[in-house]
Each structure stands twice: as structure tokens, then as C-alpha cells.
Amino acid sequence: MEIGAITSGLWSHGLIYVVPFLFVLTIIVFFHELGHFMIGRMCGIKALTFSVGFGPELIGFTDRQGTRWKLAAIPLGGYVKFLGDENAASVPDQDAVDRMSEAERRQAFPSASVARRAATVAAGPIANFILAIVIFAGVVFANGRVVGDPVVSGVEPNSPAAAAGFQPGDRVISADGEAIDYFSDLQRHVAAVGPNPIAFQVERDGRPVELTVTPRMETREDEFGNSFTMPIVGLRAENVNGSFRVENLGPVESLQYGVSQTWFVAAQTVGFIGEVVTGRQSADQIGGPIRIAQVSSQVSTIGIAALLNLAALLSISIGILNLLPIPMLDGGHLLFYAFEAVRGRPLSERVQEFGFKIGLALVTMLMIFAFWNDISGQV
Image 1 (cartoon, rainbow, N blue to C red):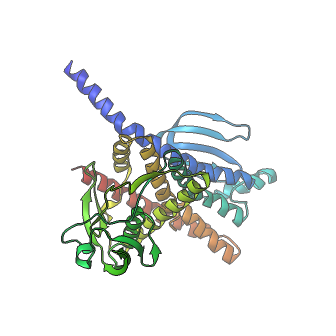
Image 2 (image 1 turned 135 degrees about the vertical axis):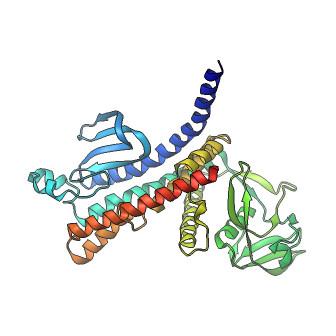
């Protein structure tokens, strides 16, 4: 009886992590590969396989165009294999192309023009960004967004804002010349600037006041106990006399919000990667599948809207990661195509093979590092 209860508990606990994780990851992978697939087919390139996951096929079917659509056993990614690809990483199989008939060669990926190959490869990350825009827009259209007036209700003692002279009742007009309409605009600007001085213009008793604040980087915990480092100025806002409210957006406004939010998150992600490379940020915030599963489980307890927003955030991250100029990733392929466009001919097979080996080593090291962060974060 006790063994049965323990087994049942482990099973249900596992489902809490696995189901939200698979939901988020499957959406992201499917749309990424769908971008490759759709543009490839529009460019006249034949797709042999569309797989969500790796390893043995669980279920699948073959469409009228001869593409095998399948769900594989290891749900940690996916791929589209085009005619003429040697493997799932789209390494060209030139020997196989040479043995093809003229009709087959016209549909092979390596035989397509540089422009068509580049468009097909770039379509995956672009699909990730489009997915994020659609999710952000759809969620805000369905639920509206909570907005608050940029009025300071409190200043934390010994904070950068207190040192700069902020006072309760100050209304923030602009930050570094950028208009501040809502308190969330202020929060986003601080997050984007990081530990750099911000020139604020505030309204105090009907008069303009200029204040300069340098945010302080602090490590804090969210409601689930996850720690993260962020810039803090020490300003608080409370819902006084309806200053916080739900704002309903129309279709066009929701789409604009989706684009704006996607651009903001992408810029923040690129900035974070740059700071990790330069040593200004710790790389211990980089997570892998275990951390994604944990966060997905936590966010799913809030509701489907929060889980979809997480999917949008991760979709942006996946899109940016794939655009890094590392062979094996989409960005590496685009780098090779750029050299080919300049030289007028592809790089030699030896150079490409060497590049893919380097790329495989880099991607493997990144995966190991992410797994290590996941495991060490659980200890």
C-alpha cells in the first residue's frame, strides 16, 4: 500500500513538471520547424521529414507531397529534413545530390539558390518571433492589461531613488528623454538600462524636477523561490484612487503591443548575452530543460495566460539562440551562405565539415553547461 502511494505520488509529481514543459516546448518547436517547412516548400524544396522530437517515431503520417510528419520519442527539439540533407542539422549530402535525377536535383536543398536556402533557414527563428507576437497580442486582447499611473507612492529607504531625491507623490514624466505613460514603462526602462545612470524628469507640486538615478543590481526571489538579478531604483506604486486599472485593447492595439513586447524581450535577451560574454553578468542564470520544466510547472499554477506568456518568452530566446553564428545552428548556416554569396561559390566541403564539428562542440558544451546550472540549482 505504501509503495503504491509513493509510486502514485512520484507519477503525479512528475506530471506536474512534464505536462506544462511538453506543452510549452512542443508549441515552440512546432512553429520553428513550421517556418522552415513552409518557406522551403514555397521555394520549391522538398521536405522528407517533419519531426517534433528526436529518436524513434511514436506516431506519424505521410502527406501527399511525400513528407513524413512524426512525433518522436525524445521531445527535446525537432527538425525538418529536406531532400539532399545528410542529417537533421541540414548538413548537405553532395554525393547523394550528384546521384539524383535532374527532377530530384531541382527539389534538393543543396541545389537551391543561396537566397532560397537563406530564406528557408531564416524562416525558423522568424517564426519564433511571429509566434511570440501572436501570443502576446492574443493574451492582452483576451484579458486586457493592467496599467498604473507613473506616480510614486513610496520610496524605499537607502535606495538609489532615495539618494537621488525622489519623494512620494512625484509623477514621472520621462526617463532619458523617453515619455513615461504608465508605471510599467518606468519598470521596463530601468530593466533595459541596467546599472547605468537614468535622467528622470518628474512633476512635483506642479513643477518640473530633474533627478538622476543609478540603479543598483540586486538578487531577489520571486514567489516560487527562484532567484534572479535585476536593476533596482527603489520606487513603489500603489493602487490609489484607481491609479491601477485594466485597459482593454482592440485588435490593432493588441498587435502593436505584441510587437513592442517581443522587441523589448529580444533586446533584453541580446543585451544579457552580450553582458555574459563580456563578464558583466553571471552565466549561472542560463538554464536548460530541467529549469524550463520547473518554471513551466510553477507558471502553470497561475493560469494558461501565464503559461502562454512563458512560451512567448522562450520562443524569443530560441529564435535568438538559433541566429547565433555557430555552425549547426541556423545562424551558422546563414554565415556560410553569406560567404557563398560574397565568393560566388560555396565554401569547400572540408571547411564546412570542420565548421560543423566546431559548432557541434560549442553546442554540446552549452548544453552541458545549462544542465550543470540546472542540477547545481537543485542542490
